[in-house]
Amino acid sequence: MGSRRAAAERRRTKPAVIGSVAAVVVAGAGFGVYAVYGGDAGGEDTARTKSAAAAEKVKSGPLTAAEVTSTAQRFLTAWQKGDVAGAAAATDDAEAAKALLTGYAKDAHVKDATFTAGTPAGAKVPFSVKATVAYEKTSEPLAYDSALTVVRRAGDGEPRVDWHASVVHPELRDGDRLVTGKAGDPPVKALDRDGGEITAAEYPSLGTVLDGLRDKYGKKAGGTPGIELRVVRGEKAGDGKGAKGSGAGEVADKTLLELSKGTPGTLKTTLDPALQAAAEQQVDGKKGASVVLMRASTGEILAVANGGHGFNTAFLGSLAPGSTMKVVTASMLLEKDLASVNEKHPCPKYFTYGGWKFQNDDKFEIKDGTFKASFARSCNTAFISQAPELKDDDLTRQAKEVFGLSMNNWSVGVSTFDGRVPVQSKAQMAASLIGQGGVRMNPLNMASVSATVKSGSFHQPYLVAPSVDGRKLATASRTMSGSTLAALRELMSYTAAYGTAAEAMAGVSGDVGAKTGSAEVDGQEKPNGWFTAYRGDLAAAGVVQQGGHGGDTAGPIVAALLKAGG
Image (cartoon, rainbow, N blue to C red; front, side, top):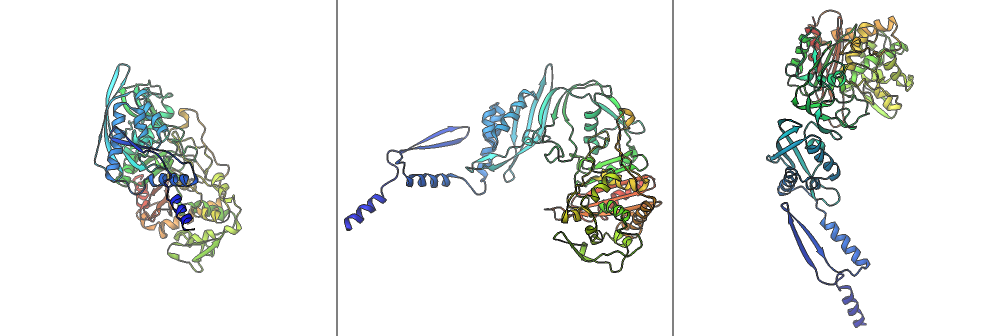
């Protein structure tokens, strides 16, 4: 019996792999590839051994400085040599990388490129590019800075360049490409309402607007195209966050380098040069700030500015508007006799609906208060408490039928996001009443809301007069009754004088009205601050992302523009 046990022990300790083992090292491009060859008994134990060995080979943990440096060097060296396949293999999406890197030479006509890596910051490696763009008989030097990030590839944990189009050029978004050739659209010389030329050098916020004007009117304005290197937007470039069809307007193609100038056509806009300068000054240095000023009675856009110039949040942003949406909600409650300006209206600390427990800022309550007091102090529960009396589509219909929002048919002269007020139910419907849930707006939309209140009816905002190209402006299907309109103006006027907007609107004289808002956003420490207001025939709205309370952040920006308007 002892001999049988000993024999069994010998069988269990017998190696699963029999034969010679050889290690082959293949050197190339500054890295090593190791392959191990050997025999195989082919049993179940062997399969488990191979699986465990494979698992051990999967790299994990933080990237080392050597891995980051060598991966970046491998990618940039191959790209500089014109070894597209080798450069693409150094990324975590070789197929997409190969397509864009191939186009860099063939479609963008970039040659003699040199790439110089900077000092890594963790896994991010900045690099500079110097090259030449040559097309037919013209050529121009090209220089810019970009960056790449090294990550562990899914599956084996090998370090690879995290592939995005922005690696090739920071202006590219995934789905875009670079093209050099005759411009698709001739250049446009945009003019302000007084006939002066508008340039991005003088008004930095208008760079994206000028791109949009060229995109729409280049062929209609009478110019001739030049030769240029440009970003051609792809199907994924829509709202600046990678989603065409998300409801946000499309982003225009962008010129990066002119090899030969075309002849521009001229196009007059509604922008007021003095007010545009004032808007630029107000957002200067405030990256998350955006503002729009318009004429309430006509819809003419007088100024638009963004503190961050890479994306036109003022026109294309898709953000929860917070309590500024209560202007629209209040108009609906007034029409349905669910609220009256000077009658008592509940404003408890909490109100539960659809399984969600809603509360006010700092959990305040107003005992025996009126609807005017709740509106002025921006009481959430005063609006949420009416949810049980509403149909799921009531707010959506009010926004569309009275305020012209969420119809996706504005024709401003450049691409815009026209607001979104989806039909929702239960807790999400209740949240929509206070500008959260699925409601999305931008300063253009909310300036239009104040303009509708001031003028009494919706006038679609526009930057280029419809007479220029015979386009039809969007219309709303109905207006508020005289009594509802008067009540809504009283609410906004009282808020500007005595409510949450009073501090910002101090010193803004005349016929005024305002509403503040703060919109909570997942992952943000501070809410987005909103403010919408009117003065005389001017209406404006602004947002400061991650700014906090709207009265403290967006309020002073909007109030300053209303003052500047005289």
